[in-house]
Image (cartoon, rainbow, N blue to C red; front, side):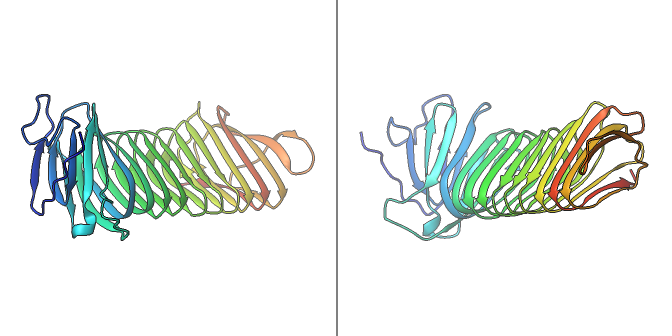
Length: 298
């Protein structure tokens, strides 16, 4: 049976509950393109936004429903349920090529996945896991309690307030991570990595052509690795830090606010030393650039 499309300009209420909703157009579960709609959901559901371009804002709220609002006819989307997954994608039946602008609210508990093309994204206030994969566009994320994964080819990534672990990669732009808890992985091909107010037992930050800036706590049992090919590494850690530090630079200077007592010297610019009583493991490798280990106030 071919899907039945609904062309509605006003708000559409669609119940996706455990019972068969009376408003569902056919047994395929395809809800058709909508401009403004509210989709009732249940605990355990997840939502996937697929192949979108333009601008999208997603915010968590306390209601068990997804609300989608667009400014004009080019913001229409098609919605479909597959088991516990709600799939939302652009309605391209009429060959529309213009970018859309959409405003979305989802339950705070709902896992969210976004797969976009040229998409500028703002997302905030979720207690769930979030995954983002785009080709281009800037990404801004605030206050996510679950695990966060972001992958983009071309676009700046700015995350403020993520507390379930973060894995972020931008091939050609900067990455900003602020107020972060949990495991941290950050990568850029040709951008700076700035990690501020990080509380983690596992950090890995790597950039080919950019600087790495880190400011955070160091857990006695933690592992912290920073890799830079062409750029500087500024690592700010508390005065109470206990860590074994491994430093390597091919062509650059080294500075430390902490006294350096060499535990190992291998020639060239690679050596190990300890801060405090040791415990944590800090590894810093810079091919062409400066390494600065700085003492932060707290």
